[in-house]
Length: 237
Image 1 (tube, rainbow, N blue to C red):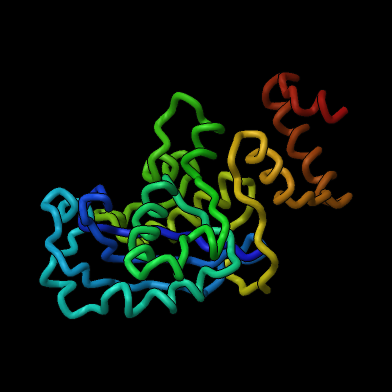
Image 2: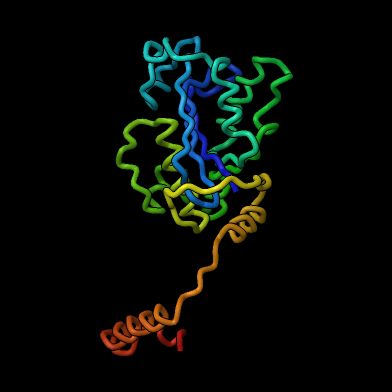
């Protein structure tokens, strides 16, 4: 199963007001392993960047003036994500901006959903942790993903962090080994779909007899030190 974790940075908050994409960062996950394949591109937005947006990502119009325009990189970007399942935190924001960029080319280019499926990790997180903060920083803390280098937002950095969070949130293990491509999965639209997809993606690994014996030995040691208070040992028995 090939998945692409995606994030963007923009000139502002509303594409309907003419704001543009200025950075795209993508990280590939194949068979629940983070691979070494990345897509990263800074983009000349052909407009000024809002001061509030600059405070978030630190990208200025001067820095981006010599970068390619979206039209120059659109084909390469779409080929990278084509057929994959996109993992995005607060997907409507990023998808909305990218769809507006594609819309500038006319109807022939379609929308992002014509090229790939989308999973929104914010929807997943809210289902798993109702009533709690579910920003990327909050999820990094919850799942012990190191985000100490995130002084400013950056599309590639945030995609890398989200890849680790997604694998932890869905019960997987982060692995930097390469893996083969596979077919995409369906779009997650509700909590039951999230639960089904999460269960389907979790491998079941049975302990060996040696591991079970070592586990029992550890529990017996805890039971002895606690004066017979090890509940796990009673469950094992």
